[in-house]
Length: 98
Image 1 (cartoon, one colour):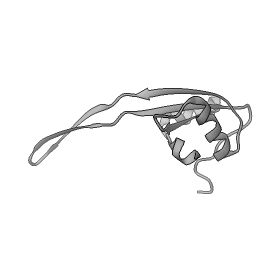
Image 2 (image 1 turned 180 degrees about the vertical axis):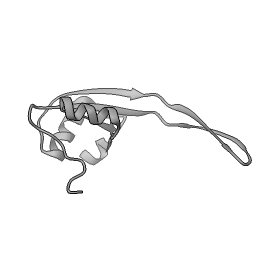
Image 3 (image 1 turned 90 degrees about the vertical axis):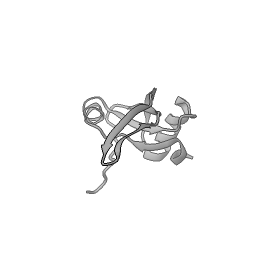
Image 4 (image 1 turned 90 degrees about the horizontal axis):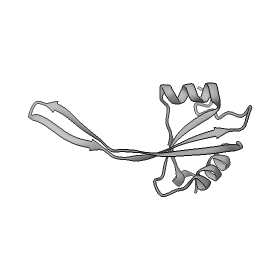
């Protein structure tokens, strides 16, 4: 069930700074899930204690690119993002033993 709620972790510069400084981790989650389900999924999958969950729906973006045959236009779909705050002293290691 946790794999259907948590789509993937977001690894960006801003999310890395949040995880290092404040113990906040960012995930792309299923649009239909709520904060309670996200909290349970993170606790089950990573064996950590979650203090709070903040969610936001990121809007779709229009994208275009130039090709030999002309300009192609499309869009990137909207998604739901969750910022999870862990208890003091806990962390999640996404990369394992690299």
